[in-house]
Image (cartoon, rainbow, N blue to C red):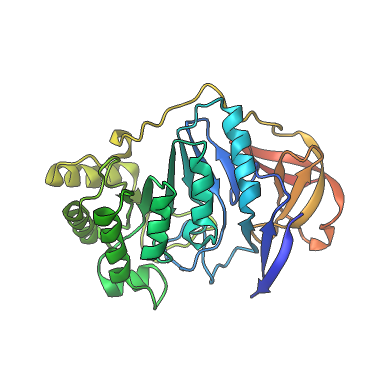
Length: 343
């Protein structure tokens, strides 16, 4: 079961080395019935982005736990999913509710995944990158880095990333090193925050094109600022409608002559015939062992009797239930991510 490796500011740090890795949004493997699977090794992020949709970073308000997954266990469960999908997986996207570059075994993970998956990509804000790590990732076969960079202005970057020590110049230099001196492709993914970084998006596109990103994959994937229940909201800034977002992208496409709307971006992603089939449906009653505190406050993590799925129990008032067996009712299941209540 999860092992406590530290506790700070009323937050648990848990190492996962013998728990199922299907069933949770924050860690493990997620199959959304396409030929790209998501691989989530850690929830830890060093930044405190003021627009973060998942409330990541040291100053998180809603998180109760951070997780680090054992690399051997993670690869084992990725193989399970790949086997279930019968060779239809073309890419493992290492992403998460933290920054994967904070994972100490990231190059080892990439190397192991590349041994049986054609493409491996990583999403990151880039701050934990070094030239040595980039070269190591190149050596083990990393195909693409999806780099989140939202402005090239130093002061604005520190504000947006919620970190006085954040140095966007350093991230830029590493991005240029990746684009010019390695075989790793670079895909830049700024978040458009209306009224905050409108002109910055132009600057990022011009800079990205000038350094030669997007050799094998689309160069940019501009994201839409969204407000989520447990995320951070920038005061007085509304999430743009999809129509407003589409108009913003269309103007940029016309100006720079490149595709930016996500439906036009070709990563060769498509639906698959095979998928990880749901083990449980809504209203199913499941016997579980409650193994640890959950990701968010008021949650606990449980393992089903088969040992094949983790289930998040919500509305938990007392963590003394950890280590006990119970029955829960499934109240939500999306892509085998299970949410339940005690009964």
